[in-house]
Length: 235
Image 1 (cartoon, helix red, strand yellow):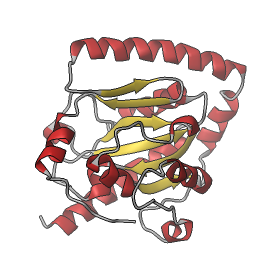
Image 2 (tube, one colour):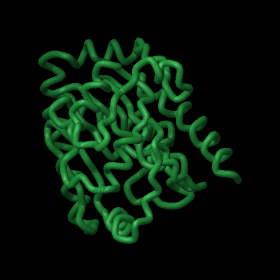
Image 3 (cartoon, one colour):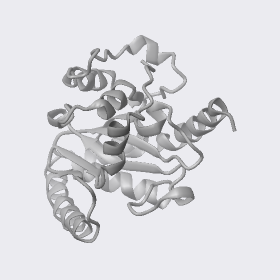
Image 4 (cartoon, one colour):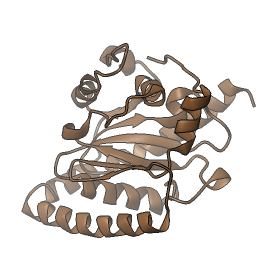
C-alpha cells in the first residue's frame, strides 16, 4: 500500500475512534501524536495522543478514558505490540495547564514530534496555550485556529450530553473525593507495573499535574544517534 493510501486509511479510522473523547469528562483537547503526526506510518502503527485535561481531574479523566476505550476494544494495552497494537489508541500522555510545557531534554525527536502535533478536538484557547507553553520549539509553533477549522483532521468540538452530566456530577466535593481515590488506585497499579517491566531510560511521570508513560526510550535514543528521524513540517 502506498504511503498516502495508508495515511488516509489510518487517519480515517483514528478520527472515528477519537470521537469517543467527546464523552470523556474534563478533556480539554486531543492532539494526534506519534507516527500520525510525523507521517512515519506503517501497517501496525498505533494511535498516540496527548490529552489536555482539567486541573485537579487528571486521574478521573484517565479512568474514564481507559474505561470507555477499553470497553470498546480500541485502547492499546501496555504490553501489546505488532498487529495486536495496530490502530489502537495509546493513552501515553495526559497534561494539565501546569504541565503543558514538555519536560526536557528537548532533542531532535521531541522537536520533530511537537512541531507536528495535530489538534483534532477541543478548546482553541487551551490548544493555543499549550503551544505557547512549548516555546522551546525552533521555529516556534503557532496554532492557527482558522487553518484548523477547515482542516479535515479537526472535529466538531461540541460536547456530548453524557460528558456534560458527568462533569456536573464530578465537579464538586464528590469529584475531589473520587479523584483522590482514583489517584491512590492508579498509582499503586503504575508502581507495580514499573516493578515488573524495567525499561531503558524511562520517561514516566505520575503526579496531580501530569501523567506520562514512555517506559522505554531506547528506540528514541537510537533514532537520534543514527540520525534516522524523518523530519516533516505539517504545520
